[in-house]
Length: 113
Ligand SMILES: [Zn+2]
Image (cartoon, rainbow, N blue to C red):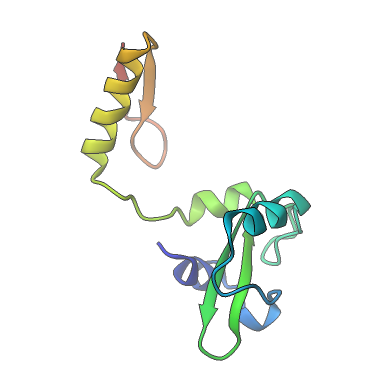
């Protein structure tokens, strides 16, 4: 899901978030992440930062802790089956054994190598 969908799912009000640049450079996002600001939804130190674009409040930082990030993962850029194939091939190329968990509760395991 995108950042706006993540904020809605986590129940974060855009008005409560810190104003952000509309299109931050990676260095700006990295600097934000290094500060580990407490995430407004749960109060835990954040581990990742992104920007939501709210029509009423403009761009705002959405900082998420690990658990909140895992509950609102970003969309895959390619089908899961293709991503698994790519990881298997990359692991095989460097001689590593890969163990991949492919379902939400970590019970379905794909192994390679
Ligand atoms: Zn959290």
